[in-house]
Image (tube, rainbow, N blue to C red; front, side):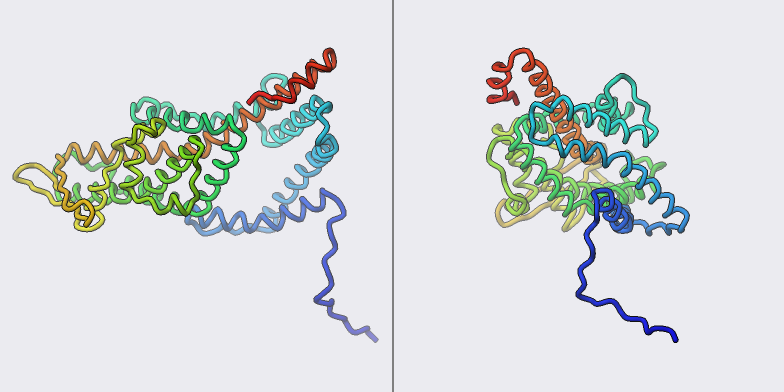
Length: 370
């Protein structure tokens, strides 16, 4: 006779992973489906169907990375907290990064894999050659670099900026992608249209582009204004930044106290955005002008008139600003990684020199350089 099958007890606790390798392996395999779903939702595409063979290949690749990385990670954990072991820890870190780069088929030029990592990272941060030819794009890109520079030299400001960036990315990542997808669709549908001609269709298309672009830039402006507050030593929470309207943000950008934000001046007009959001554009074909009327109880009625060429030029400047602002997170991560590696190498050099002059190392470590 067959023994009756006993159902497992519901309250029995799952056994803990026996080693770090098992914990990483289990964690990565559980996170893979969630990661695929998250990326698909962000890109607004159906998640791909993974066959058993493809899933097995991915898991085998994960296992290979884990088997190579875990021994080095374990050695680094054993060296944690001991400053005299910094040169050895740096060597283990360099070997760990070399393992990752080799597994990704990235060629390592030179003796130090950390330099190769920074070079590969910099490729994603650098502007394309055709974008570098556009004056406004270069101006915004350099402005982003200037905005980030004072944040990465101070550990406290760097931490506050990291948390703010993560908060905005968590809340608005899909909205950023939705605008980019909409822009690409409009560009594909109207790439052969001559927008310099003043027609009802061209005015409608530019109005839609300017309205959606202003809404997308408003969220980016809140983030960049928040980073500037952190650099000034008076950080604001996400809830406080959320209360700032587009007009408030433009006033902050134009203020003489906020010179790091001046590269964002005149990239968007809140009156035009409000007019397009409510009543739309009012073309006057007899005068070749387009009027935008905005009314608010605080400021009263405001009317702005643009020619078709000015409307096109301002829309293009707005789009260029949004596209260049997408480099903000990459620039910040690259700058923090570069500064972190520079600090690590500085302390490694101090430890190396301390072998010859121990007292000098103790005095220098007490007041490390930023």
